[in-house]
Structures are given as C-alpha cells and as structure tokens.
Length: 116
Length: 130
Image 1 (cartoon, rainbow over the protein chains, first blue to last red):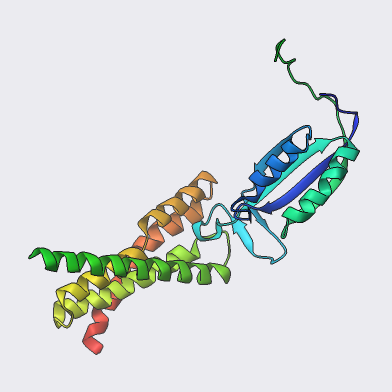
Image 2 (image 1 turned 60 degrees about the horizontal axis):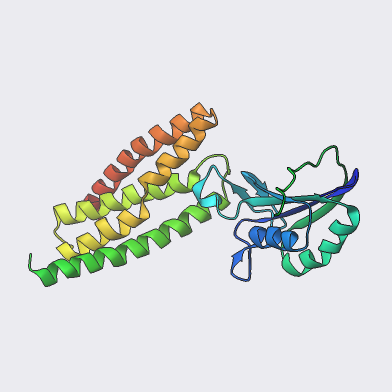
C-alpha cells in the first residue's frame, strides 16, 4: 500500500468505557477505519487524564481508574482521513478529535506472497 | 448448625456483602472526588470507617450480646467484609511504590494499619459511653 509523504494524523481521544453498539468504542473505530481501507490505526491507553467534565481519571487510584483515556491514532492521505470524519461524527458522542499534518517518512509492509 | 440455618447465614452474608461493596464504592468515590487524586484517600477512609464500625459492632456483641449471630454474620462478615478492602489497599500501595513515591506508599501502608487499629479501639470503647 502506498502513502504520500504529506499525510494527515487523526487523533481521537475517548474513554475506555465508551461504547458503540454494545462494544468498546475504540474497537469499533479501529474496525470502521479498517473497513474504510485506511492505512492503519493504533490505540494507546492513557494512564491519567481528564475531559470535558474536569473529572480526573488515574490508573493509580482504583476508584478513579474507571474510564481511563484511550487515544486512537490514524495516519493516511488527507482525502482518506477526511472521508473518515463523517463516520467518526456518528460514533463519537463524547471525546476529542484532532487533525494535524503529518510528514510520512516510512510506511512499509512486507509484500504479500504470490497467489494470495 | 442445621442446614437451613447455615443456608440462612450464607444468604445474610451474601446480602451484606452486596450492601457493603456498594457502600464502599459510593464512599470511596465521594471521598476521592473531594481529595487529591495522588493519594488513595478513598480506600483509606473506607478502611478506617470500616475499622471504627467493626469496633463498635464487635464491642456491642462482646459486651452486651445485643446482636444475634445471624445479624453479626450479616454485619461483620457480609457488610464490613464487602465494605473494607485489603486488596485495594495493597494495589494502591503497590502503585505508589512502583512510581517510587515511597513516602506516600509508607503513609498509606502503615497509616491504614495503625489508624485502623486506633479507630477499631475507639469503636470498641464507644460502647461504654452509649
């Protein structure tokens, strides 16, 4: 798969307890990105943070460790990332979505074996 | 103990555990909301309150026999068993040690044991003034 040098980085920050159609929202977003043919997605789990409610979440205190932040990062060509935004608009009811320019230095994958 | 009596005690303990666990969740959340998120005040408060209440109930049962065995099982094993938590205390102490916060870890580990004993004793003595 080819990716242009000038890409876009899409960052989606939600809570690990957020759900979409009965499953974790971050999983649903990764699946949706995969279905849409985006180049890849990575999910990070945050150990501390707060959101719009200013309620602090931290992995250190058991009672505050519910709904820790989860960050999903997707890098791809600008038009492909922008085409994914309406899908996100449907799915993310609470969270933060940012978009920034990304200079793609490498995007490599092994060639699939012949006949596959 | 007859089978039906044993079953009844287990049912009371199960009910008490449910009450205690929900109470712990609520109190720990309330305390943690109004205190620093860098120290496990919620678990600390829960365990100290649990020791105080345990002392009061234990004192009542030992000094006045005011509580039936089933009620004692409900309160001490069920409610306070579900309410207080050794595993959360251990987990949060471990987290502080892992982050090299040795002073907070020591205050948490030693403080809960020592204050727990003091408050248990206070609860036990309270019966003399009731």
